[in-house]
Image 1 (tube, rainbow, N blue to C red):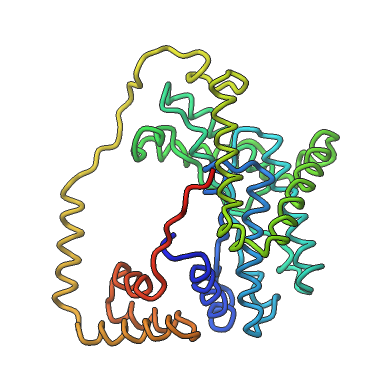
Image 2 (image 1 turned 180 degrees about the horizontal axis):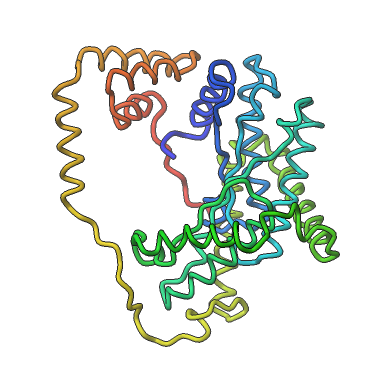
Length: 350
């Protein structure tokens, strides 16, 4: 993030409103629970906290006169896929239930597309170990199978060397092939909800849903996600989850092969990605050339207009598009908005 929570909600609401009115088939926002889970949130918390954020965005857009059925179909949700295969399948199933009922019962949606939850799943980078990194191939495969069983729409599989460096070309290709083999050779993608009806899974889905709804209600009682960020609740919950996980790891209650069990004591011995410095130099040269060749006066006019709109209540998307067409850089655009709204500094809360 860059901006404080309230202006950040405003930016997202501006994008959602603009897309609903001007480009209705565009995916306006991908509400992320992934970075929350990677920081320590549990499966129920990941759902609850992400949906609490979605509520903030929806509420900010609907007061502008946009209907829920115009905006909700353009919302995707970005969640992690961790190592507990059954819990992850249950998590995605529970999330679909909660979303559908929230859209229908709370927001009065009529369009089935508004009640359909669209997922981008990302295998959990936090599950990858620097020790014996080849073991991560198995971990990513398990997470990919869980995502397939959960019926996610799209998936990104991590590369096995990401705990050590940016992924190498070899590891990226293997991650891609992992998805393709699961999708095309296992038969999992041919079946809707293949574990549905399992007593254990149905019970676990109910439990994840119940706990997620409890968190969502608590956040609503605080005044919403922004209030829960301002008072430190979300930070405390996520930090507490990270602490609990680390304790279980150090005490051996949670086993990670190669880390606290089956350790060889040997450093990893794989070829890692190395950055080519000429790539960075080339990009810097292109940026310098752009700044010299563009119409600086047009850039400044566009940035001034963006600043004026950010200070008021006018949707900033048209002014942002104008700035981009004038070849203002992302850094310059964000700098203008930072000058109006400031920069957020999260306070440590324990």
